[in-house]
Length: 59
Image (cartoon, one colour):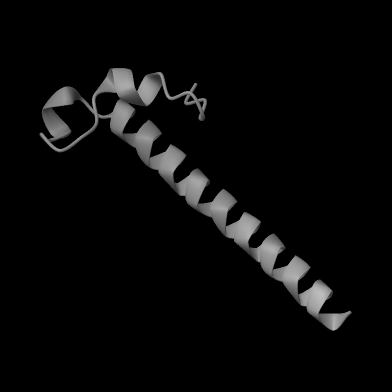
């Protein structure tokens, strides 16, 4: 029975980490969109890709 509890705890930790990482990525995308284009650099994902993500609402 302890193994079931440990597995559930591990799943919960994994979900919490997933949520933390998603929040970090969403914050990063919002930050990029707030910068002037001249300060973004060539490596940044295009606005259209950031704004139209099917999984995340960037506002």
